Amino acid sequence: MKNQYRRQGLILSGLMLLLIVATAFPWRMWVNLQADLRILEGEQHYVNIASPITVHVKGDKNGVIALNGVPVSQQANKLNLRAPIILSAQSLGSVNLEFRLFGVIPLRQMTVNVLPEQKLIPGGHSIGIKLHSEGVLVVGHHMVRGQTVSTSPAKDAGIEMGDVIIAIEGVQLQDANQVAELIAKHGSPGKILHFSVKRGDQDFIKNVEPLLCQETGRYRIGLYIRDTAAGVGTLTFFDPKSNVYGALGHVIADVDTNQPIVVRDGQIVKANIVNIKPARRGYPGEKTGIFQEDHDIAGTIEKNGIFGIFGTLSRMEPTSGSVNKPMPIALMSQVETGPAEILTVIEGENIERFDIEIQRVYNQSKPGDKGMVIRVTDERLLETTGGIVQGMSGSPIIQNDKLVGAVTHVFVNDPTRGYGIFIEWMVMESGMLQAVGENI
Image 1 (cartoon, rainbow, N blue to C red):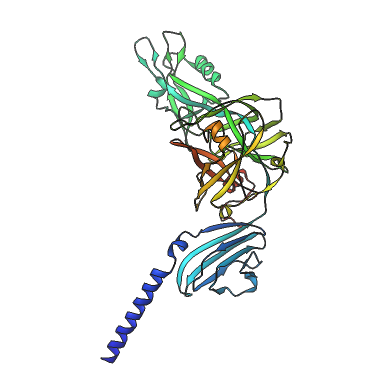
Image 2: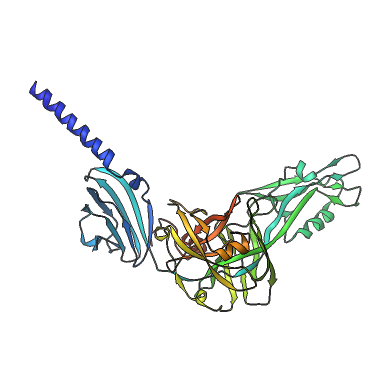
């Protein structure tokens, strides 16, 4: 009987202990702890939690990090920590940590990557963007009136809006005019033409029989196509050593199909802002700029990715003021809610600083284009633009004298607010930072 009471007492004590742990332990903080943490060499990161935990360390023989001031390589693989943890980046490399409660219960695993310090020159310059797509982009269908039937031969063959036509009869397409020339050259009664088509990540052949149009006397296939795109945006950063730049903070998509444009080639040039249509609820507003191709800025467009356009500058004249000075970047873990600034142009070519507030910072486990919510607080900018307008995408976000991100999207129903992307993701896509979790 005594043994039975003793067992019941132990069970009750265990249940009470688990209840105390469940109610008192900050589980939410551990759930939100980053699985992949990146720190710049020489920087620190705080895990602000005081709990009876142990940290099990794997793969740090070269002193990549220090925990609470002591290099991991000089400590045992099992560290008992009851104070807030300070991770200090000592040298380039990667290390894996596992946090356990009471040394037994696994809580989270974390991979810490120490990256080299990166200083970039923030942008803010208004740029004109000109893109040539790979092949030609299908943006619509139309009917061709033949002798006995009216139809769209290309649509009948299965070519859809958003498809990219790469080649016709094995001839690589360089521009939209070439499509009509090839159809005229090869078109004949009953002749089937072979179209090389790209749809997303898939490549395939479509067989199209052109129809002799009774209105024009030419063979036609019933497609609207486009091979170029142009617009105004904002330069986010450039590296004075490599001349690599990043801009926009989001992908350039076709206006009709909303499909990302696959770039064959393109260029950026300087843009002079001549007019701004202010944003209002339900209407985002826009900057209007004049391209100045023989002026201060010129560069190639080599990539149109989800985090912006990237390439190499062939010409960049210095600008006046502090915006022309190299500035350290901040990784995601260093961005915080509170006051910040953006650099952008609202008239002519003059880059100005405007006050904003970072209202929310998202803990992203993988790269994404909506990392923070920002709100324009600068009265002059609000009076001039109404908030965030088209053409402002890519405007660099500065906080604590560091380049932390770029403006990307506006809230259509509240143009004073919008999203920003972490500069970390843009720099990573440019190739100047290594991918998440990759050993250095």
